[in-house]
Length: 251
Ligand SMILES: [Zn+2]
Image (cartoon, rainbow, N blue to C red; front, top):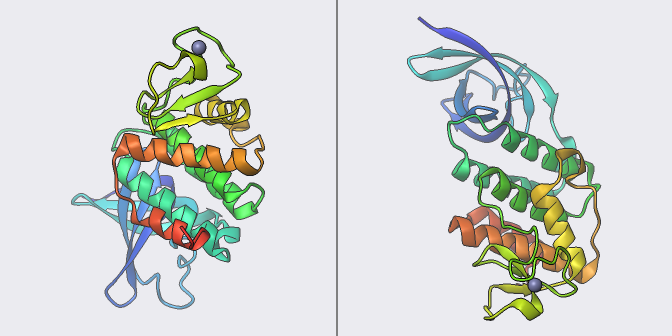
């Protein structure tokens, strides 16, 4: 006996099947559902737009024998601004890959919130891409319980060291003078970068992206966030290589 359900979700992958059907992965507060949609690739299809990649909507689904089928859907946000910007599109694809590789079937409402908020800034072009990327990476670590401890130096308990060092292997913060060993995974950095990292890890969602960094500080913040994530997750991420090929082809 088929059952029906209504869920809000974001399309994070789409695969064409048969003549005009598609399968899409829908990221919801309760994990990822794979949904089959009939005839949505026909021109003029009513549900063509709402079932495309990076569309957020409300979906009425039918479940039968453990599979989900699309009955109807209403679009809530298509994030149009991402679709004409190749770099933003590449970054959104990287976020999708991270979500697919880390989401579980347990309820994770904050992960969906993080992704939607990040897509909003990519679509509005109101924050630099490296900053959106770094905040997403560090906050993802928080939501997965893998965040660094950035409260204070564990040796002298200073809250805001004059010369902070962000340590990737130890997943913490230490003063330059309190450190006993130097590792190539250490980031000798500035207070502004430490404050940005703290905001990404700890701030309320309303304030998550509400800060600015310039020049070298922004570059270092982005570098720290990416290296921290890769170190903790130990994943190979083709979409990340593609993003870097696009945005800094010389590297
Ligand atoms: Zn210290």
